Length: 411
Ligand SMILES: [Zn+2]
Image 1 (cartoon, protein in one colour):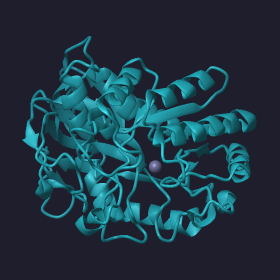
Image 2 (spheres, protein in one colour; image 1 turned 135 degrees about the vertical axis):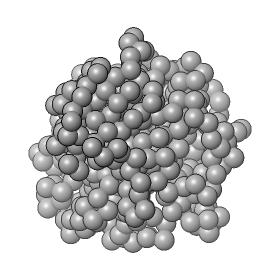
Image 3 (tube, protein in one colour; image 1 turned 180 degrees about the vertical axis):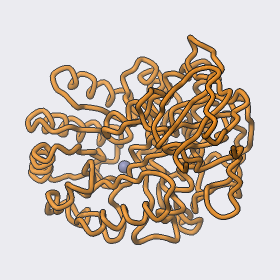
């Protein structure tokens, strides 16, 4: 019963067929999509014409747990993800202790299970302690992680990165490089230089590579060219690099927010299908840490509304394409049975109020971090409800838990 739901009268997102449909989820799996669906035994959720999309999948987020629960823990991170329309997230290894051995990944899985909201997939560290000196226990981590990354720091030692790519290839896991040489002040050059090396290593070792948060169209071009010869080369861009420029939001984030022309060329690369994924790089901090210069944005709740307002509403990107970058492609890269509205796939969907306008406000974050350059910004495309495997985990500002009115009509 928990994983059964009949959603009535939702607007199907595809632009070619502006249809009002019903969606039948049973045992957590989509069983039917159509009109006039009835099922005497299923609880109902009336969508009243709200837009139905496959739930989002985030390849890049920081939940700060273990180590920094005053910034975010796996429960508050899961709540924020649910509120942002996400049902699966990939969490980075820069925790304390670092996720460089299996016990930490096991802990993350356990805590996510206890939170019982979204699926949390740990990323293992490439190097021990993220120090860039010795390899982590990549083999021991393999059963618990889908990828390896030292995100936050570039792996500058070429020989170490070569061995990491060889190992990841033999374990059939993805490598997610954070491409930046710390001592090179020109951040665009620092990014392209390391991307060039990692593309070479990926080709040499046959390892699957997913480049984190590309920040210039030139970097995208290098990846697209390399892709022609090899398999499994993908990249992601963040909502803030697509939607903000330095003049509008002078905010500390890594890589830095660029000027308007760089931003415009990234949007063009995305619109042309050259970038695979939009990932949030959700990076919650306390106000005190932010004042001390900690880089990052608490962005998992605002990702869709920001992209919808700035790219879809303005006609730069069709909604169907946005769904591909936020749901379909990331699910495919992780090998999840999600990301599309297909019979037989996981019953993971999100309902959107396309005209639902709101102003981003510090008090409304479900995340413990409200560090965001969007505070005070009016946005549209409000998340109304999130469903994970047929279970309503978020609706109308509230997350599943105590005092949760799940809006379903009992039968
Ligand atoms: Zn990073």
